[in-house]
Amino acid sequence: MLRTVSASLSLRVAAPATSALQIAVADGTHRRREQLTVTANGVEIEPKELPAPHGGRMHHLTLPAGDVEIEYRAIVHGEDTRQRIHEHDLMTYLRPSRYAESDALFGLARKEFSGHSGLELANAVRDWVAAHLSYRPGSTRGTDSARDALGRGRGVCRDFAHLTVAFLRAMDVPARVTAAYAPGLSPMDFHAVAEAFVDDQWHVLDATGLAHRGTLLRITTGRDTSDTAFLSSYGAAVNLTRMTVEAKVDTELPEDDHTAPVVMR
Figure (cartoon, rainbow, N blue to C red):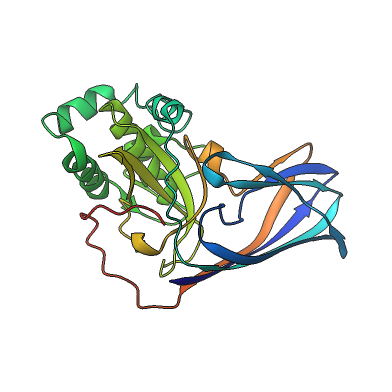
């Protein structure tokens, strides 16, 4: 399988600032060719690459005031066959986090999902979230949590992922959020999905039903989107004025009924 992905961002920086960029494809056993270019007021800036968990790669940027253009493109051959499974991660991803308040949703989770286990439990959670949230672009804020989305009954991909993860953790299943490139996604954007640790593997769950899970390409993985945000900035206002994301695969998109187990490759 060959996947081609790209992201283009325009920023307006009010004053000198630092930013953390997470749009590069995660390291893996697949082969990739890529290019990341950052220019500020027409002058190229060299990003500093920092390792992130699960093969993720963060790029640290020191930005002057003015206009910044970011261009990323990657061609990825093959699949990532390496499973990064660590005991510390399995404990970390059982804990409540900023946007996935599993402790606050414990009672509801136990009411709805008691009696389920393993992949059956994971699919039951996925189906419940899909039935109780409506996907509406632009309907929530970047500071909204799983409880906020549940209360409103609507959200975007990050909200579906947060609620899925929160319920799974409340049921004692390690669960995490992954940002990915998603060929075939409509509307096209960076995509957030949940991963649940079941039967000694991390299985992908997408309650939005929008992604073809077999073609997803990992960018970064963490407790919730506080870890996986594509852009974080500090020191001054940094406004995103334009963004385009593309993701394609060289084969037909696979059928996905969102019930069969899928591991992100």
